[in-house]
Image 1 (cartoon, rainbow, N blue to C red):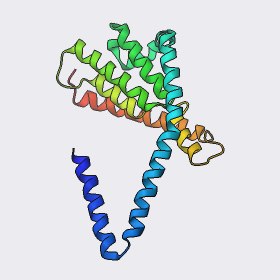
Image 2 (image 1 turned 90 degrees about the vertical axis):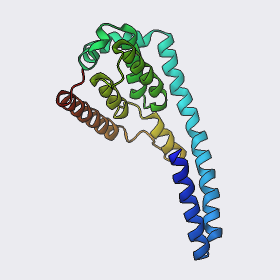
Image 3 (image 1 turned 135 degrees about the vertical axis):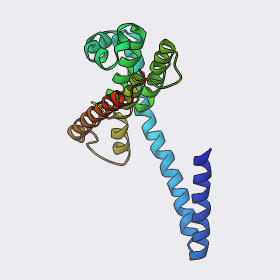
Image 4 (image 1 turned 60 degrees about the vertical axis):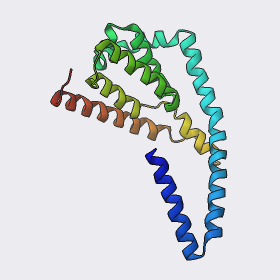
Amino acid sequence: MVMSWIWTGILVISMIFSLVNGSASAVSGAILSGAQAGITLALSMAGTICLWSGVAEVMQGAGLTAVLSRILSPLSERIFPSTRKDPMLAQDLCANICANFLGLGNAATPLGIRAVQRMKSSQDMTVATNEMCRLIVLNTASIQLIPANVAAVRASLGCATPFDILPAVWITSICSAGLGLTAAYILGKVWSHD
């Protein structure tokens, strides 16, 4: 609700200043071209998002997320100890991590929400636990092996090699996820609710 008021205010202020400056036609032209560019970008990204979201669903349906969950269990059990008791939570977390590996934040978010709901039901708490905070940090600062959304944006803007950013994406995503988890661990020890 607040964002709608902010956007409305920005538009009203822009229109007032364009009328004062005598550039109303330029502003209205920019609004129309910006709206068209937004729709074009959304449509060009839809194919990539659908493809990789479908791959994630096929992986889950074929049981690959269960296999990946077992492979990632030594790491996930250290970060999320409650996965030792709840194999469905481990699969949800693994599916979330795999979706983030593919650069699909849109597909990873519902899986992360489902994992947090499982954590909450097992803890029966109203305050976020340290595990929940670590999941939110890991979901936000995710490690991306294939940045599908960014590549789709670059391709839609005419980039001939949309995946040439891979080394930079790998380094920055590993650093951000590592620093985020370290900060969550340290702050969890300082202000522990678990």
